[in-house]
Length: 422
RNA sequence: GGAGGAGUGGCAGAGCGGUUGAAUGCACCUGUCUUGAAAACAGACGUACCGAGAGGUACCGGGGGUUCGAAUCCCUCCUCCUCCGCCA
Image (cartoon, rainbow, N blue to C red; front, side, top):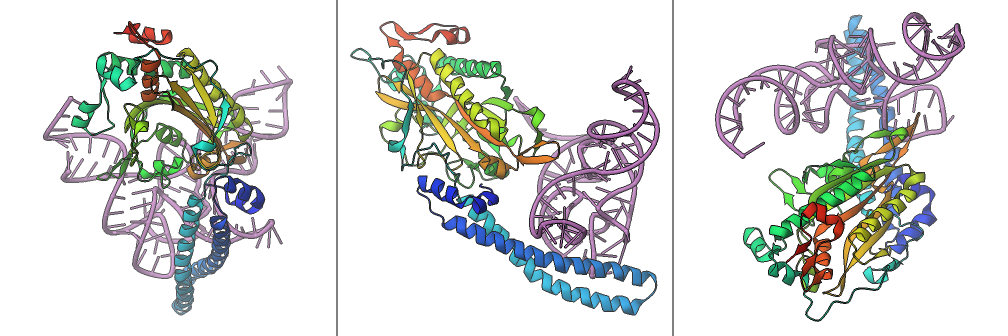
């Protein structure tokens, strides 16, 4: 949620930013009108309330001194004031609700460096793959065939148990998952991120705090009996740890990480993009989250890009980094970099990480502030996948396949206990 | 799931219908004193909204109600504690 002050004071900047997302100024204008109305209503209400409070106090005095008649007279006056107040209060509540809903509809303003554009086709390559893409010999198999051949995961079994898009990992496939999770967490904690293991279901307040609601309503699984949402990413519970908090600047930066499964309904996607593990309803991910001073957040973003790059390099996977265009960014982000890994058998780039700075957009919804002495201001929040498993597994299997089986990256071997899948 | 008890400022803890945004203690902050610290003393010390300011309004777990007036009474929901039941 954007700050009202920004909408009022930086109209040109807001307009230019929203244009990059192909969004107009209608809601911005409406928000300002509603905010003006809100203020005027409050002033009027406060004045009436103030008068009523003063009279009520006088009633108390008159009652004490035995002046029943005077008290009754004042009661009538207060009654009249209240009659005026009630409709005002109702109107005011309505105005606030409309203002809130309007603000929730306005997406974050992209960073000035973010290119304009409509969709993924307009994204900018920020960093090319560092080396020549591997070329596999004839007969190389896509990961879903490898998964079947070596009994690493079973999609049909998932259908039986749950439905499509819920893979069942088994044997060395399951162990590889566990190894990747442990490796990613160890790397993150070595970088100073505190590990959390949060709930996998959250309430509506948490979903709203990070922007999953209302923007992604329908993309989350909803446990209606208890009105809880299955998390689409660990970002939601981990960032919400600080919802409503005021953090002293001396405690910054806050660096958190956590592993969780991620649940996404992903309704309506078909074709090669969803073959095998390319897009599933449940996958595992290690997420990193940071809370920063505004002046530090872009250095933090670079640091996070470095961290994710380091992981992919350690796994020896060819990757590139995209800077998303305005139209392809998520609703809440100021700037987003996507990491894509080359899946050699499919000859396809697979997105394995998304690293974003939200500036104050999430913090404003979360009401997450930082303070230095008496001075308080909104924090900047950032997060990134480090990393998302299913597609990493897909590319490891495909890229590392050979005549003698699939080679496990060296850094993972201490975690898997085996060097080859055969 | 059933029965009972409780939710007040950073913490502890009064208040139980009328200048109570809230006593008191501790913690924190600022001064005085001290070479420095401690102690002592003095002061400041919640959040949000409106207002140029003076100041005003709201908030005592959330929501609703009674009343001229609610932290105080009523309803409801949530959370925690104790006991019982069930259970990985």
